[in-house]
Length: 275
Image 1 (cartoon, rainbow, N blue to C red):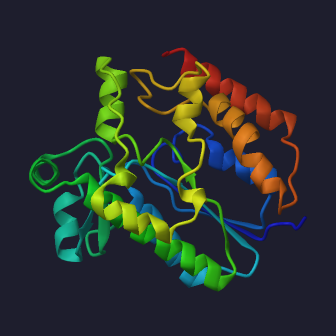
Image 2 (cartoon, rainbow, N blue to C red):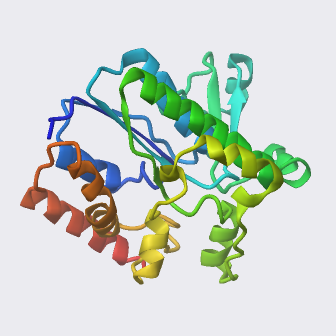
Image 3 (cartoon, rainbow, N blue to C red):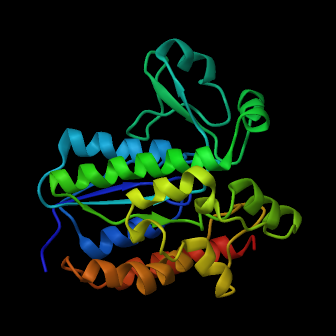
């Protein structure tokens, strides 16, 4: 087993939560020399993939692991030119750079709003969004990341917050906020998706997502304050059961310090006060 040099992480708010998440836990387990955390709230798979691609092209060394946590296909990242960025600086979700930091008025950026759909994006959702095209676009950017990692000798371990090929973010949010039944659809069996999915290996389709793990094991997922962001101890349980075995196949893994576990417990207790 080898000691990891560089860990690249990207994801949406379930990764970039104010409490410790799976990403913090993996950092403690692997203890890499360098961590590049690109995660930011509201992001969709276009930003998540592209941020990893950009980081690998810029600075990846030979001993690098890329671990993005992907999310539902209806989370739409809107690209903004420098001339447009300034118009969105005061929005609920501020424009971000490819490094996951707040963009200045003179930078190109991504406007990522998660399940919140302001008017300009709602128009796209109502009139142009199609699950088959969205699935294909996600597969193509995943394929690009996959091939880049293979060419650069970067290890890639894609993770998922939910069954992205079966549920939309808007339906999951409705399930937790309004108690509606989850509507399940097999997006990868749609006309275009059937062919395009052959570009990707099984790791893109066979996985245990974090939210599904919590739901199946009656663990807390949602509350009115923290929304659909499971507490730290749920992240820990999921990592131990489904991420750690994969990491141990290739990398030197360390035991979590007791003081770190205590912090996880304290943060989880704070989360539970609002459950």
